[in-house]
Length: 210
Image 1 (cartoon, helix red, strand yellow):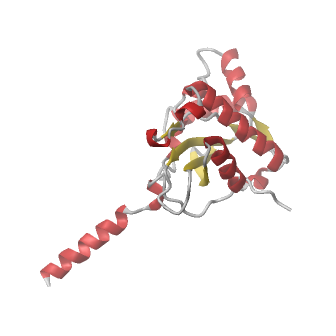
Image 2 (image 1 turned 180 degrees about the horizontal axis):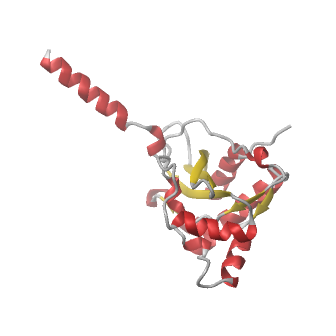
């Protein structure tokens, strides 16, 4: 009886530790962004600040230097948002940067506020000082909703039938007044090139609506 109880406890522990959302290479179902629910409103889009690739993929050269890869990812995300969800008045990272430049000492650079912490799906209340910095920036350029591309992670897919590398693109939507993450989702893409993989992920994240 005692031995059976121990085995049951071990099974439960193993089951709890195999949460696919905690593994960037395990691919659950993609949750498309509910962008249309913000139609007619201003939504601030924060920059990508966390973008990593496993060394084994050999994609670091194709991705380029840190600043270049971040700006290219921002640009690609902007392209998809404008094309797929034009009914939202998007405020993109460059506008946030200009706002911060106009008020040095009062507003933090959006690239350096630590927004990548929101890649953790367990976070529901956004901690300080991150939420204060987000609220101050949005107060000048938007309303209350922030779209945060919290992480872009390139790795090898666990499904050995898939060829190429996989990207996991994680996004949080934050209501800065309530200080809460109101939506969280990830999209995935597999390709032989990192930028093609990211395009595939964005196509899943922002599908064409009829």
